[in-house]
View (tube, helix red, strand yellow):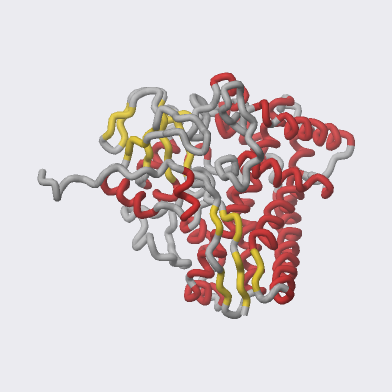
Amino acid sequence: MTVRDAAPAVPDVFDPRRYAAGVPYDDYRVLRDHHPVARQEEPEVLGWPAGPGFRAVTRHSDVVRVLKDAAVFSSYAGATQIRDPDPADLPFLRRTMLNQDPPEHGGLRRLVSRAFTPGRIERFAAVAGERARALWADALRRAREEGGTVDVVAAVTDEYALLNLADLLGVPESDRGLLLHWTRRVIGYQDPDEADVPVLDDGGRPVNPRSPALLGDMFAYARELARHKRRRPGDDVLTVLAHDGELDGAELEMFFFLLTVAGNDTVRSAAPGGLLALAEHPREYRRLYEGEVELGTAVEELLRWHPPVLSFRRTAVRDTELAGQKILAGEKVVVLHASANRDERVFADPGRLDLARTPNPHVSFGHGPHVCLGAHFARLQLRLLYREALRALPAGWTAGPPRRLVSNFINGVKSLPLSVT
């Protein structure tokens, strides 16, 4: 092999600071083409200690295999975040459905699924649609008053995701700001602008915001709200869970944690990303506006283009092989959803936004037994929000550069200036 023929070096796609400038799709392509199961170092970044490193899985077929094969690639062994949790926290983290393997995972999943009845979904859709319409109307009014520009994240998408989640859980209006506070604490911990002042351990290192030491206030609130729902039931998910005799207190607390963080941030991250894509592709927006493309099909393409979650971790529990690479038991394996969604082996011209794209087997909501439990609700919310955007923004509109979250986990947008003409 000549020097010219040598494969390019393995790029770093771990450093969360890189994602503040956008998802490194060019580097993902290098990995897919030359290093599909690449070793990534895990150095100290932003005060967080170095880790042992991991394998980054970037091709669609390999990502799907990892997500489907829980017998080999476990969520339980080391939980599902890239950073290794404190060993003392693992028993706590394993209480949540996200960090369990079948069959235990399936049993908990079926319990919470009981809350999503057709009638509740129908009522939720009616309220969410009216909320989207009101938020867009208020945003346009503010834009007119403030010189034609408004931050769509602050004015529309954060409020929309938060209020929908609060209705679903049955959180009183006076407490709804707590949900956003907890979401930012857990999701934005890598971003100096989003994170709380970090709590340090005895060695001066930051304590993981998902550790039980830092979630006591959320769990105390969950217990109190559950007691309230037992005394005064409502038409909401937490009422169903609070009255379910199969859930113990710890499991209910972890469901509240999971629904609060994942339920809020899935839509909170996807919605502004989709709006940014439409703003940057006016011809595609026009196709959607004029009815050339079905809204449901467009939502799938916007999710492929801007997946809310960038990565998830599994741990190999026995020696195996992936894309010709030996994986040893105990190694961390991290699937990169955003890379799989741009894999040329699956998607024709994946770097082009095509709102009519079909089929569209993106993995933005995962795959296999852990496919996102709230995917149906997230899609519903996004359809309603974009439908009202089409009504509110019929003329030319552009967005200035977004401010993105510093995170290698969540594809977050912190602000998105919207200019309406």
